[in-house]
Length: 193
Image (cartoon, rainbow, N blue to C red; front, side, top):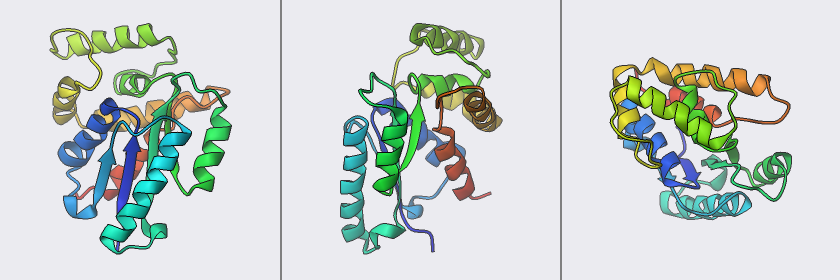
């Protein structure tokens, strides 16, 4: 039997995105016990919070901690240490890392184009262009992904495109740009067709 899946995100935008995938796009039933938490800290603190929540989930569900698959979702946000150091810390803690550089919106953009852009305001400008092309009114606001939910419901293949584009982007970079697509890929494996 599949154990619980715990996803801890540093912000509301990531929480909303993965809840859209779980509930609306992949329609993964709640009995899979996917818990998504947001605003729990950054980087190493987020990994620590994930470990703490794993302990609590283990007790509540009566499931050994080793059977709980854990993910920490974060982005660069002025990290004071290297990605390699954060990855090592997560792995030593038994936590998978889903990372975006410079921000989660870098991954949102991959749904529409294979972008190498790393300048934050330019990423948002590109997203706003795609929003307008898809009928959204107004500018991009973090944590307001209703426009993206509508687009993905109409064209769910965009999730596959985002994964492919993110994989291509990481192969073209000397440092990790996106690994958040690995969590999306994992949720794809859990969907009921």
